Length: 492
Ligand SMILES: [Mn+2]
Image (tube, rainbow, N blue to C red; front, side):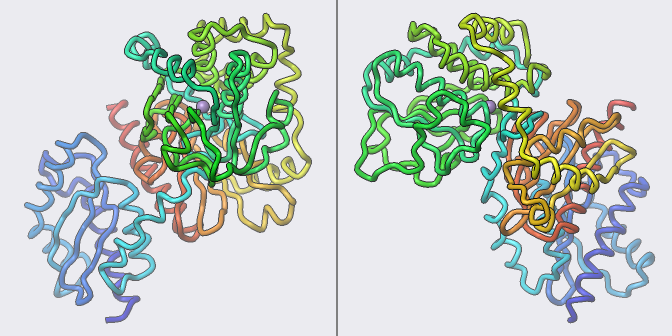
C-alpha cells in the first residue's frame, strides 16, 4: 500500500465523518458536541480506528462514542457512497480523551504511519519541556519577564474557602526547625517566582537563617534589580546539604532547574508553595492556593505567620511578584486584599516606578524589533475569536532577540477586540512552544493540560513537535471546536 493512499484515505474518512457530525446527519440524540480528531488505519486499510473528541462531561463522551459505534454500519454505507469506494474500512470509534491525543494522531496520519506503534512512541515528546517558558506560568502582560502568569487571571475561587483548609503551621515549623535552606522557583523564572524566592530569602535572613538561591541559568537582566538576585547560584554542590528546600511557584521538582537536588538527603524537608491549578504536586509539605494572585502574596502571609517585619528589600521582591502575576493590577485576582498587601509593601517606602520601569520599560531594542516582526504574523480565525502569532528561528536570527524576550507578545494578540483566545507558536529546539491566553470565557489551562502542558484559566502553555503548519492547524482546529462549543452553548 502506498503511503500517499494511506494518508489520503485517513484524511478523507476524518473529513467525511466530521462533516456528518456537523451536518447533523447522525440524528442520535446521544451524540454530543463531538469532533473527529484523527483516524488511524491498519496497514491493509481494512480497519480504521476513529478518534472522537467530545467536549463535554465524561458521560457525554461515553454516550457519544457509543452512539457512533452503533451507527457504524450506516456511516460505512454513507462513506462508500460519498467517497465512491467499494471497500470502506471497518470502523471502530474510540474516545479520544485528550486533545493532545487527537493532535498526536492527526499529526501521525499526516506523516503517514507505516506502523501502528508509531503512535505510542511519540507520547513523551509532548510532556517534555513544559517548563520551557513555564507553562504553568504564562506571562501576562509583561514585557520581559516570563512572568506574569497570573493566577490572577483565573477569576473566582473565593480566597476564603481555599485558605481555610490551608495552614502555614507545618511550614512555619519546618522553617523554625531548620537552619540551612535551599530556595528555588521554576526554570525560566518569572517575576513572581523570583520575587517570591528573593522575598523569602529576605524573610529567612531576618530570622537569622542561612539560605541558598538556586536557578540553573543566570537571571535575565531585567531581574537584576531584585534584592539578593546576585546571590543566585547556578549549581548546587553534590555534597551540599539542606535542612529545608522550598520550591516556589510550581508544584514539582521537575519544573525546577537542571541540577536541582533530587535526593531527600540533600533537600531535607521538601516544601512546595504554589498557586497553580494544574500543577501536579509533590513535596513533604505543600501549600497550594490557586486563589492567590501570586506566590508573592503567599510569602507575605508566611512572613506574617513567622512574625517577620517586612523590610524594603522584602517589599521590593514581593511587590515585583504581585505586580507580575496580576498584570500590573489589571487581572481579576486584583482584589481588595491584593491592593491592601501592595499598599503595605509601599508603606516601607519602596518606589513603584523603580520596579515597574525595571520590569516593563527597559526593553532591549532587539526585543522591540522581534515584536514588530511577530505582530506581522498575526492570523485571525474563528470569526475573529481566535488570534495566532508565531516566531520562527529566522526571526530570532534576524533581530538578535532571545527567547525570554518574547514575554508579553501574546497579549498583543489577545488584546484585539473580539479575540477570546490567542496562541503564540515560538520555535524551540525540537518543536514549538505554545502559549495560550484567554479573555476569560475559555479555560486554556484545560486545553494546555490536554496537550501535556498546564497553566491558569486565562494563561497556559505547552510544547509540541511537528512543523509549524501541522501544529498550528491541529491546535487551531481543536480551539475552534472549543470556541464553537462555548459560544453555541451560551448563545443557544
Ligand atoms: Mn505565579
